[in-house]
Image (tube, rainbow over all chains, first blue to last red; front, side):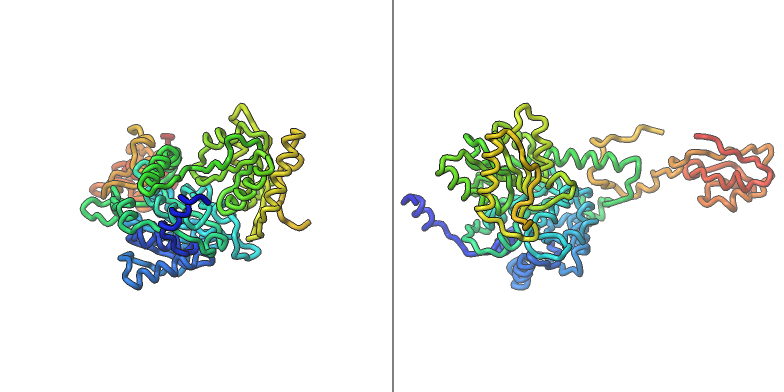
Length: 403
Length: 92
């Protein structure tokens, strides 16, 4: 480590926090008007810590301890329609239980922010990390951000508020982190000053409040053959607009907090010949492997997707089309018999590109199955093989499963 | 009927941005067939008025006067019940 870096470390105030605690800290600083949430492993510590802040009078948030996730999201819909800045948090089966209202929140264009701690959906019942919960919600109309570590999930929670509430967007946002791996591991976190966060998120002003009795409005009326389609068209447009607006909001965040957020992260891709695409915490492990292989002279790289919705297609095409071979790692299966959800999307994006790398899909880590640097090395080795032979031996591989 | 607004012209998310708009909504627009009465045959028995599930038969001074097309949904019960068959269902 260079002396300057050491000095920087010494002056930086780092606090030991888990991913869940980091999100609770972000929520304390955002101080939403309403939080309606139900605890579920491994999201529990978010709700628990935030409830403590409410009880201690550290925030003026109205906390609604509901009886289920279906009620949590329902309360959030009502609250957000009234114009209150609204948050909740969930995981896996909790997200599944709120499903009906998850779609309603997005369709009603309510800018709710929901940290989701990724956990395998039952069954068989499992409490550990995979992405089957939020991947299932990919068509719900929510924006989805995938965070690599606790620091990032803290920052994404803050910026999500501005993204959701932006007048060009007005869509709810899921801020995802890996269950237990990120949510329960302690990291040194740099917290921004409270007042700086408050200034960045500002006040939320809704255009039409449900509580404005002088200007009465109706939220969620019956919408039949004559208008439903038009409202869905608007929703599609909002998601499309968000691709342009999100980089602007991220730019403002980066300027304010001296950070470097983007729609995706390109790690040593410039001169790479083979690369892995993997989101969230596994990208951290992959970076270590990339560094090791680079020392051995292998031109490896990593593309870490951050936004899944909207899907930044152009960026994927730009980053991947010059490569020789690419592996897309999915922490969930979509049971399409054609691989996982990230694979389908990336493959579809490359269809329009004149230059296409060979691609293969690896489904890994289901139900929290550990993934080790050795597993990732194996993937890079297969990519080398693909590069050499020009052939894809196996389109979809289950990585780390026992035969 | 006037042209409906496109997706760029309406409030987002299905929001209705003013009160009392139910009054403006003419449920008669759901209709495919409309009842037409031949008053030369009508005996003013008011069976149609009794059976109409939507109060869409207009009656004045004990006489059947026609239909409220803003709300009649064209179910055809009036035509079916009419004892002198003076109500015909015609395509809109």
